[in-house]
Image: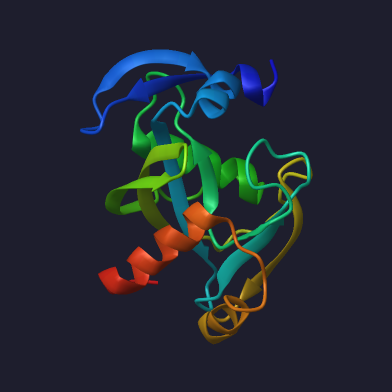
Length: 169
């Protein structure tokens, strides 16, 4: 099964499930679904930052300060946050990411409910080559400086701005 074939829950403005569709169709038709964003920091408080591979279905080759992705059909946000963080970081045995807040991301024909989490990763990372083209752990000040220098995924940037306003991150 390819990522485009993964079945997602389609949700309404209140985040209630109203149907299901393959990821590729959900993206192509602008169907609202669910995503998780996990801010991963190391023992020194540095943030895991990466550049997405050029083969990603959305926002290829852009930078992101979150690991995460879509919530599968019938999957909880919490389960998706842990699964996605472990997959993208290439680790096993992370603590359950802490839920911070949820918001509705909308930009043009793209829309998804976005649950934001944070987790401390003290394990050596080995990111998925098919997801991550480059990565590093950046000090928060370095991340702030790079916000104006690098091209970031717009949904991750929106989540990060809300995270800063929320008083975390």
